Each structure stands twice: as C-alpha cells, then as structure tokens.
Length: 112
Length: 111
Image (tube, each protein chain N blue to C red):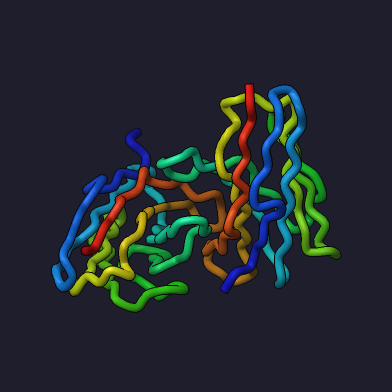
C-alpha cells in the first residue's frame, strides 16, 4: 500500500539552482520524514516533521507540511553536485509503532 | 558506534536454496525493521520487531521469516528462495517513533 507519492519522479538541475520535491499522502499521519539515498547505498535521514508542525529547516534543506492538503515539500537551496541522489518521503501513521511507508522517490541529478 | 550492520553485502542463490540475512545495531534501539527495495521503487516493509521478543508482518511478508535474537540482532530468513525475491534488502532500527537508521543493504540475486 503506497502512502506517499513523490513528484516529480526525476529532476535535473544545474549547480546553484534550487530543487523542490513534493510528496502527497493519503491518510492522516503522526509525522513525515525525508530520506536521501545515494546510488547503491542505504538511506540517510534528513528531516522529520510532526503533524502539528508546518515548516522545518536544516542547513540548506527546508521542509513544509500541509496536513489539510496531505502534502509536503522538500526544498534544497543552492544545490551542489553532491546532492545528486534519490529522495524519499516516508509517513508514520498514528498507532503504527514507528513503521514508515515510503514513496517511490524523486531522482535528483545536479549537474556541475 | 558501528550503527546498523548487515551481512552479507552480496549473495547469489539458486532457486530453492535457503539463507539468512543478518542485521545488528549497537544503538540500543527497541525497534528493528526489514525492507526490500526493487528497481525504481521505494522501500516495502517485510517484517518488523517493535521490541525484543516480538515480531510482526509488514506489507510483503510472504516467503520470509524473522527472528529477533536479542535487542541487538534481527535476522531475515528465506527458506526457499525464488527469483521474485531478487532485491536489495535493508535493515533499519529506531527508538520508538523517531527517525530510522539504515544499514548498507544486502544485494540478493536468485537465479
């Protein structure tokens, strides 16, 4: 059962540009998390945003959450070639014991 | 801290063979998870263990068994491997309701 769906599936930008990825989900959540996966590697946690929060920042990352629209966005500012990776949103629903449901991801390519 | 470790990194099996994927974490986390990731897909939960001594099915448990050996270790067993189980397997752990920490993955091919 797919809860989160990222959009776009793929994104190609130049270094220095901003990258925005969106995530939509279907049922109410406890929190929403964003992860990054470099090719052939495990996932690395980026940001967790709780259902009562609207925006969070971490360095060049900005995450927003709109629970009325059941959507979230991840903004990477001033992108670098090292940001090239796949980005996944994952949702934790109430009572899920911390289980996450992952979307299919956005593949970001940042060209030097 | 090694974090979450997985063995082996790569494995090739023939249809019908069995194997166990090992996972260990040194962060004293209660919860541990096994996922599979297929090309172009997100992660799908196979089994999870909310605490030592408990295990529960996730989204795609068929063909797999798990054992939570102790708080540190959570193993995934394929009793009779099938080509449909060719995938990359990730183990993860977390303190309750927080971010998950992932291992590097096991790339499994079933011929």
